[in-house]
Image (cartoon, rainbow, N blue to C red; front, side, top):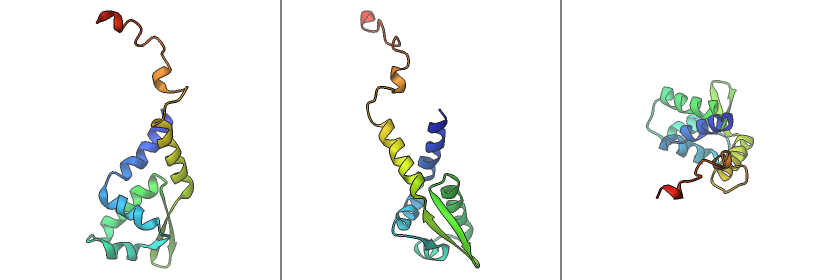
Length: 111
């Protein structure tokens, strides 16, 4: 269950179109907050809110330099999230649906 909670934070953060666009921008490399602001009609405080959510879920890293913050993608979190997505969308022996092998026993008998 813990894995699900961890990774759904990432998907929730990406559920906003502007945050998804910011991640797309960062896929080209590190960007200063001022460069991100130039692409969107939003206040600095709104950008800070978006970046806070992306950083809290681990998808984005921020570093301060002078009065600006520079953002980049966290490759390790992205790779783990990709693997998690592959895991939950692929058939596997240890799938949660197979934890209780008797869950549907007798279902066909009731039809």
